[in-house]
Picture 1 (cartoon, rainbow, N blue to C red):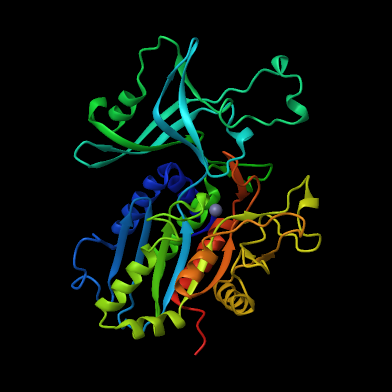
Picture 2: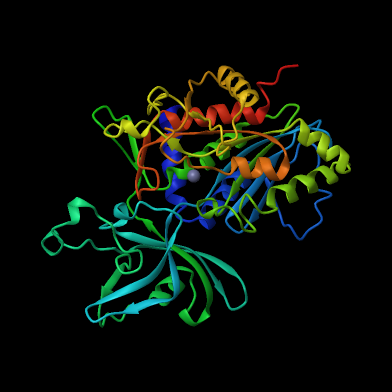
Length: 427
Ligand SMILES: [Zn+2]
C-alpha cells in the first residue's frame, strides 16, 4: 500500500475505533473479511487450528490473530506483533448524570495519563460498550455530546502561568443545561437500539470527536486522536492481512489496558497471549516441551508510539540521539528495560528494515527525564520470548489530538509485514 493510501486507511481505522472495544471489533471485522476465522474461547479449536489457517480471538477490548504457514508444526516459532487498543481519556462513573444548578454534567474518572489541558474546549463523544440485563454486549457511540469547559481568563488571570486543573473539580464535562430533559442513559441506550431500563452496565469513555486530518505547508503532517497506539494496531492489521508467513506463525496481539499498567484479563500482563499460543501449540500436536522450544526461537515486536524531538523543547530529549518526524519508525532503547530492545534485537530490526527497505532511527531518553514503557517488557517477562520495542514517532503523546508525519505509519506497517512473514530470517 502506498504511504498516502495507508494514511487514509489509518484515518478510517482510528475513526472506526473510538474505544478499545470498538478497536477490537474493527480489527476482527477487517481480518475476518481478509479470511480469518473467528474462534470462541469456549469452543474446542482442534478442527480450526490447522496448517494454513488464519484465526482470530477477541477477548473484551483485546485481540489475538494468527496466520499459520502451510507447513506449521508445534515447533514452528511465533512472530508476534504486540500493540495496544486503549488510549487515555475520561471514563463514565456510576450514576454519570450530574444535575447542576445551571448545567447538566457528567461524572467521570480519569483513565490513564491524558494531557488534561488538551481535553478542554473540545466536543467530546462518548464511546464504549453497554451490557443489557441478559449480559449481551452492545458497542455504543454517541457523536459529539460533551465538553470540558475552560474557565475564562477574566476569571483566572493566572491560567497562563501554570494551568493545573483539579482532577475532580475541573474535569466534569457539560452535556446540556439544567432542566434539559435529555438523559444520558437514554442516549447510550438509543445508540445501542435499547431502552434506558435495559442497560445493566457500561464501560464508556470520552473521545475527541474531531476527525483525523492532514495539514502543514506541504501536507506532510497528520493530526489525530489515539495515534498512541492505534498507529501500531493498524500497522499490525495491515501487515497480517498481507503477510505470507514462511517458517513462522504470524501473530497480532493487541491488548487493552496498557495505559493503566496492563494488569487485567485483556491486558498484556494477563494470560491472553499465553493462553492462545499454548492452545495453538497443543492443537498442532505439541506438548509443553515443543511449545517452549518454539518460544525459544520466537520474537515479539512490541510496537507503540514514541517521541519525535519537540521543536521548542529539544532540551527534554537526548542531546545526540534526536529522532525526527518523517525519519521512519523508532527503535526504542533503555538500559533499565523500560524498553526491551537489546543488541540481538537491534540486529533483528536492522535486518527487518533492510529487507522492507524502510529507514529507521534509534530513540533513547534524556537521563533526567523518566522513560515511558510499553507492553514489551511485560510480554517478555511473562513468556520469555525475545522482544524489541519500536513505534511511530509522535508529537504531543497523550494529547486529545496527537501528531505524526504522513510517511511514518506506512513504514512501520511495511517493517511489520516483513517481520510477520519471517522474510528477514537468515538460514
Ligand atoms: Zn502507547
